[in-house]
Length: 453
Image (cartoon, rainbow, N blue to C red):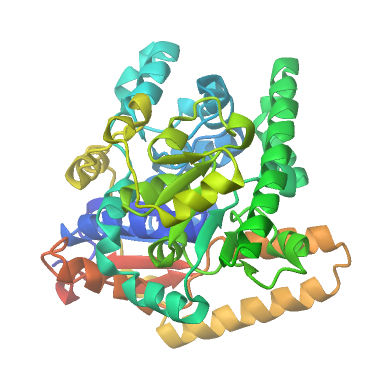
């Protein structure tokens, strides 16, 4: 292949590794197999992109007001944006979804929005009729991985979790509204959502609901553990592990753990307990025993179809019954009343990205970093950050910095190539795909030596 040949180019940015990496890596590898220039890495900015490639289609996870300046800079410099929406499957209401994730100042910037379901797309088309062609109902690749249990990629890790912890139930905490209230409020403030008094009222009502649910989940975890059932209480990525551990300091049968992606924990569990949580949705599609715990019939979201696709428990006794009884699913609810496209086609998603047609030149030799140098650089960055953290005495700020760094960090190329091998073994790929570091937490993905330009 000729050096510096102009081809379609794509950059997949990742905010939360445990949530987004494998699904985006799946689509990225399929594009790389076709011979395109494909990258995956940290959140793209104009300075980071210019160091790698002159133009590309940048695949984001949302289009929020706080990203307008970044997106505008990229677009003015010749890059195009696609929003492969990560946040929009479980929403409190469509007005909250639009206010936070699809506000008018941001929604116009991407060339396309790849959406979870029909309801979101139809609502956006009604709101923004001039941009109707941008809203595509193609679903999200995460659903494809859930339905296929990640093609066995996590089986060995799940077995290891079983050996370490034995039999357990997984309780999914997604209550950052209460447990990390300062961070959540800052996030809403940055989007401009709280500038309207009616939205402030919605926020305050949601806070009270989430506070109630978190405290009920804590009570339930303690009660279940006292009945002889081990509980893994898993914080959301935006929650503080150490803060939640304080609630269970006297309970040896409760483990607070956020290691790894949630998938191996789901696979290793006897049952999964949630309330309006994507973990519950994932567990259901993986055919695991799933229970929505809705004390006093309270759900975190008004649009709470996700709580109805499997078992529902209103109290601890019903939770215990749900843990020991066979799994139950309600197929008619699996599309969440139209908020979820439950027949995801990877080809459709790939075609939607190809259709943006951003072409560029690229020379790997000018940006490639050896694996050994990548590891050294990572060690240097990590050591420097630890030194800076030593002089931070605000524990809340220190925890926020720690949580931010944990969102996306890749140790070396093997983290990615192991998954490419899994894709190849399961016939998702017809040719071997590999990668090379081109920056901090940033990799060029290519098919073989003929594609390493």
